[in-house]
Image (cartoon, rainbow, N blue to C red):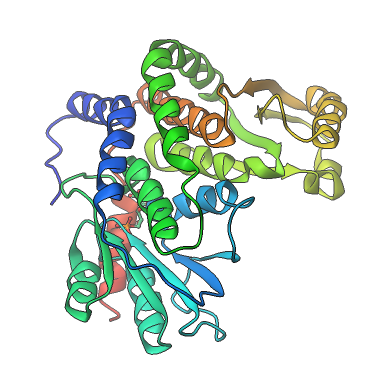
Length: 342
Ligand code: PA5
């Protein structure tokens, strides 16, 4: 798997293609999810979603999207271990695009040992081979994508289907995903030009991103995409929590920071009020302040609209900085180093 890096222009084009094809990926992901053979479960007490990086971020969206309909708590696990309470009543979704990520493999092994009910979501690797051999339910993602973070559509939709087919959530999401991909197809050009403008403001500044509590997954995705695609540091925090600590840190010359508020017009009223009132603090101390509003009907659609916009921001920022959005050599290097200590 993987792709040879021939020259940087080619890689801009490749990531550009992957991002531009997000609506097609959502469509393909729906087809995969509909066909997936997942056994319906009884007596599930909680769901544990294990996955790192681009294969882990989908869990944050899933948790928020199903919060109103899930019959059981959804927990996110980003480590080698899983909680001691996990047992045969715990549904574990092991999500790794490559199927070879050591933390996810270790968590999967622990889930096996603790007799959890397991569904593996992967394009192959050790995870898929072992899960198939063990007779666990699996969802196979298309192989050959060089950047797992460009497969969010696949992993997110697969996780939703896994939860639905196993009996943990109703199927509220298919229509919302169709609405999302149709909107993105229609608005893609406009989103690209908005994203380019945002990226221009980020070139010389570090983005600090805020939103209402329910925007946490989207903020995390923007941050991770800026990190990996654009090789840019960023951080995020949510309202109302930031009003109880981080707001106090906003004192001094922070002209190197750009505040980006990701907002939904129907964010809870108290959160909106807090964001409006805190605006003047940012405007006083930060080097720039901007608000970006979502578009769409359902929360899922609005969130994925912002996700797609953020993906384009990371792409244009990489281009402006002369960075190759495909490569994550430092992660590859670290993984190689770690292997020496196996
Ligand atoms: O997007 C990336 O390249 C990373 O964040 C990977 O997703 C992360 O290293 C985990 O790998 P995988 O998704 O193959 O489990």
